[in-house]
Amino acid sequence: MVVEDLNQFIYIQSVQDKSVSKVYIGKESRENEKLYSLPHLCYKINATYFNNNMDEVIVGLTSNMRLYLNDKLFSNECTSFLLNQSFLAFVNSTSGLSHELFIYDLTRSLPKPQTP
Image (cartoon, rainbow, N blue to C red; front, top):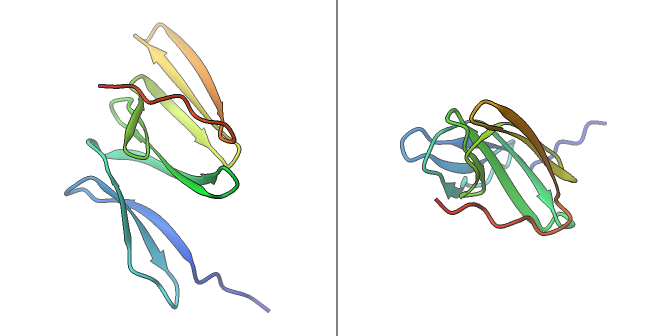
């Protein structure tokens, strides 16, 4: 027997207003949820739940090396990231000379995002 999850969804970023939305798919799809508006288009978006599945975090990376957590700038030197329910790992490249790996435990509070 195959049981379908009726709450399946994907995250989509709009080209027009750069907003990230949760789009539900399936037989009984619900109305789309607009979550955040970002200042830039992201070429990679990932999401997870953390803090005992209570908080949802959207992570997006732009082509100009900006890493966003939800609608906040987290790093402006990021080259790549990996996200799962336990951790966020990302690599920063400083002036192309050195690379630093940062790993954050998502069961704890994340540091405050950068201010532009």
